[in-house]
Length: 250
Image (cartoon, rainbow, N blue to C red; front, top):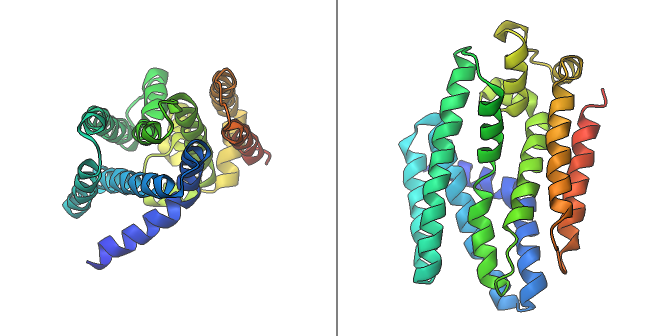
């Protein structure tokens, strides 16, 4: 099906950099090319699943759900029973994430009032699929658990991407954190479509300061983690923080 093929092509391009970071963590600890390739295959499968299910959540197109189910079956068939059970528990939580994301974004689109607690829960859950990938990584790192820094990295990355891709999201209407924050302050017709205007408005309304405080707290939390031989992940979190600040230099 052309739609699925094009979507898969988009997904694989979209995940390329993120996937390489996850695989790099594995390769740092395994020193085994065969295991690294196995981990890469599992992580790619998990990422494809998450994207297809997310697209289904946004569009209600069941073709995306069916395709996502194919990948989750492939994943579970490749795991030990114990690991598969853990992954299924995490999967249930991620599905809740997609449901909540859809619920809150629906309120924004309908111009209903949303509260800071809803926004906070939204951005925390928006990145919860990273818990899935962290559990896969743990299989290959002799029990070294990178859940916290991978989750933090993903949260910061998602905030940066929602800023960078504001205009595209404005037109295509997938959930966007910057748009959501703007909707708390001004009416829908006053939210700019132009990214530069949106960033200026966000600065003037104090939204940049709010988001900056969130990102700073995430970076601070990450700094307390023992990265072991994966200090590159700490550096990447700090790099994303710099990217976030640079986005608002308008």
